[in-house]
Length: 464
Image 1 (cartoon, helix red, strand yellow):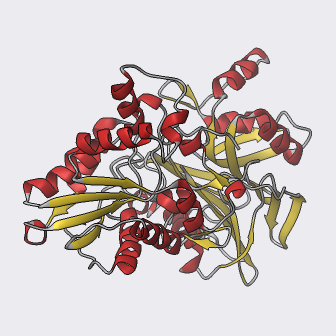
Image 2 (spheres, rainbow, N blue to C red):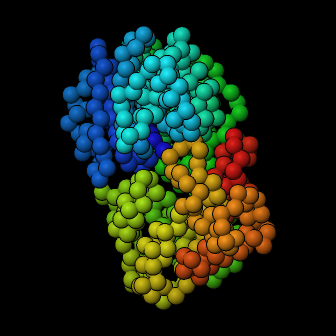
Image 3 (cartoon, one colour):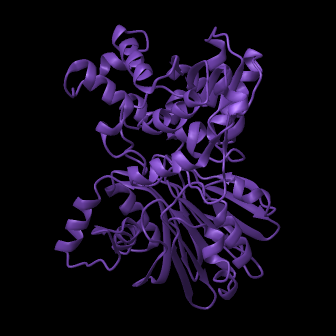
């Protein structure tokens, strides 16, 4: 998942843009960029793999004058893209994933279009979106036609001389939030970016909604629809604790997830712990509900380490997982530990770099409690897992069945014998004492939105 931020101010916008974009650093690990309109368009892009946004852009943003700007922390492609089109010059940033990108790119090639931004031999998806938009009669028409043709999701910010066009994806998978500070306006993926900059939330964009932020304020250009299916994983793992989506805070939703896990549990343990950082709030909720004290047997060495989930290569993910968590033997030795985490995706890091560390330092028992159900389907709407075969639950099913199977319906039933066998296989593979996953309905209850308002594809395989 990428994070995007835009701002229109009465005075220079560059400082707000710099810090507002930086507050999305937990989302992307590949590239970052800023674009500012100050008479003309200026753009800066840096590779942030192995570095931090603030260090890369600390001098750049000071030399980018203007009162309108957009920024991005990107999970994959180099952004922003700047294009001089029939609509005039504009810059664009996107957040999402286009499942039929190759098909759409081939069609544009046949129409005589070309692409200048190529990353690792791939068409840059933000440039693809830009080229599709300029096929429209105007910017609004172009965004609507692009959205209708893509399979997946795409929220975007488009900056030109008029202001910032903000468009949320048609399913509402990814959030966009509008904030105001006096006569200044901002739009963001993560509402937590507003808090220290003094912006107040005034509007959550609806799916398919398009607005324009300009010097005079907020203008609705295309009304959205009420049928929202926002990504549930935002509350479970991806989102920042201080953020709100559809007026529901991330940290408190995670605490409720932990409490739900504790309600269904009867384990006797010496402590509850969370795998930092996103597992921490789940553990807090579990501790508050169970009465088992919260402690920190593993601590995260924060500076310089990305999330181990987001880098594209397994080698990089494993290195981060190994190096960032440091055990405290004095707390671990001889203890029965309930360990809460947001999810089990591939399982390799949990097995090799978490459970192994606890076992090596003398943990007596390790009881894993996971805040969501087993992940069964790779996400079609954002960058995360791209293959069924890398998912821990699918590895378990393959081992139990003797081969890959297409129909996994019996393994989705939390009360079936197949589900229990799958969980038992994962427990043994990880080397845990016990393992409990959150029930789907309990996770939905903890988030606090109706089931039909949530995207649950990675657990159910059902499209929005």
